[in-house]
Length: 78
Image (cartoon, rainbow, N blue to C red; front, top):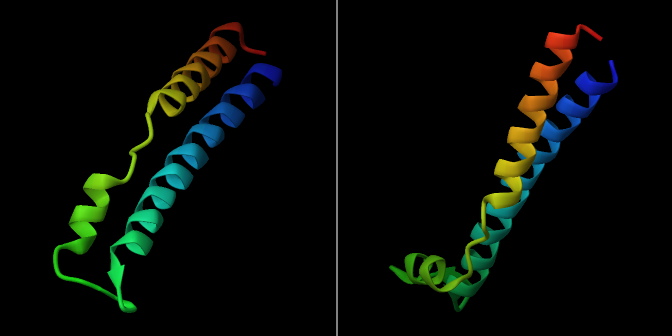
């Protein structure tokens, strides 16, 4: 069960990282794009292009490791 637990945990971490990092990017763009309390026309798109997008490398690494651990646990039948 240890490898299965580690695999599920890594898959959960990958999902949380993906959701959190993308939502933070959109939130920052929404805050930057507002003008006088409302989002101006085209400002949100401009703010999205200006704000830094995060690398998806940590999510991919956690996802691949999680899948590897799950496959390894099934092969070994722990």
